[in-house]
Image (tube, rainbow, N blue to C red; front, side, top):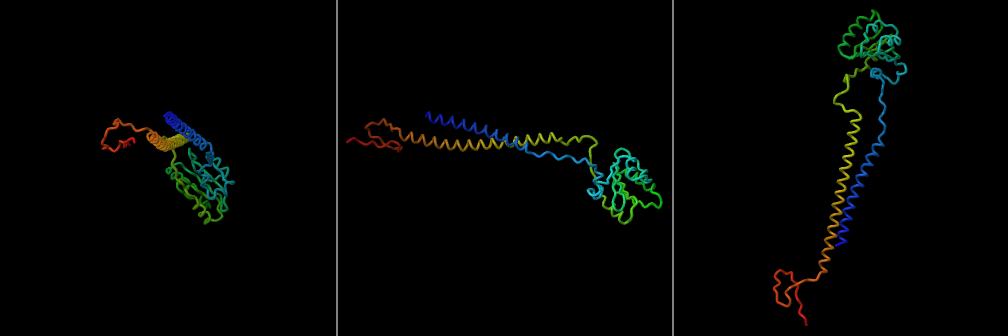
Length: 251
């Protein structure tokens, strides 16, 4: 019986050590996965209006970004149609040189401002000017000094206004990067711990069943070696239950 008790204690201690090792291994795995995560790519700081220039990668060397009339005038020269634009807060402009002429995109923050400035620009274009102008969404788009009106209109067709929604301040319901990282890490730790505990319970069940079978076999062998006891002596006894062994008489 001492052997059995020692075996029970050993198995319990082994299961506990296995569970601890599994939890430690799970924690190490999570930490290793976090360490292997690639660094977040740097955010592109290029203004969106520049990226909306047709064939941006081709013309980016000649592209100019402006947030006021003076900066735009330095790139395009003095133009009455451009001077009529009121560069209030949120107005941005981009210009680049194309084979057909110089393209200018002026972006307004609201549709109302775009409509209002469109009326001013249309009235400011001089009679007989070769400038090709079109309002596209919140953009006022110009092709200055085009050498081909059809090619200039084809270039304007390539300008696509893309709507986007942004908060004027921090978005109230959007989690920060730190919150997202914390949530992902915590979820990973919980899942790893759950799987480790489940694995430990499975091992404990398997080893428990195996030990129970071994212990049962051991008790059966011990019982088989024990002598049979009977208080009947030499008396005749009915073996109705079938458990009393037959008594062999002495010769």
